[in-house]
Length: 165
Ligand SMILES: C[S@@+](CC[C@H](N)C(=O)[O-])C[C@H]1O[C@@H](n2cnc3c(N)ncnc32)[C@H](O)[C@@H]1O
Image 1 (cartoon, rainbow, N blue to C red):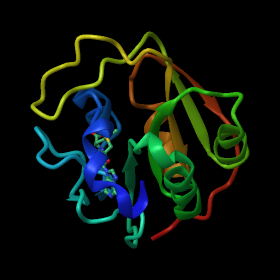
Image 2: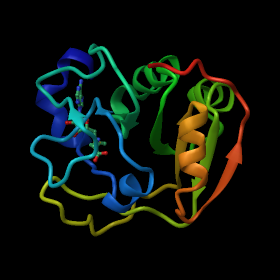
Image 3: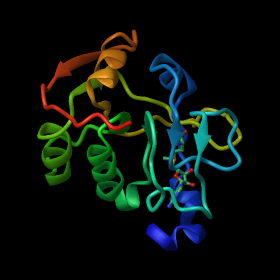
């Protein structure tokens, strides 16, 4: 969506189940946060009308990106090198090959289907409709993911990320 996000932001507002975020430990930044939101996902949040894609990212990033320009968001996290993304496990796609298989440190394929949450905090009635995975960039995030206790299968990819500050 880039700079054209405001009118359509509502269609992208599917919140991460809170137990998934807390299992991964504390994050410094959620660059695509919901506003208003029922709970915090990081120490600092960027939400529309501010543009988290254009912002400077610092520290450990949690990313559940808008799908309308997923590759831009995930590419920025791969370049940043420190953080964890929640995305659909579309393992065959060009973006998954380029940004996950070839660049991530580790992936956890979640067992079962997630139910995302709505901006008021309630759990969506239907499940996500597709399998999800958590993608770690950087050794620290890979370790956190491995030790998260979430129900999933952890795969160490061994790609090295330049750890950002
Ligand atoms: C899939 S939701 C995830 C929300 C939250 N990060 C979470 O995991 O619970 C994506 C969010 O990105 C926000 N968003 C969309 N475009 C954005 C932009 N350019 N900058 C910051 N946030 C944006 C939307 O408002 C929406 O709340």
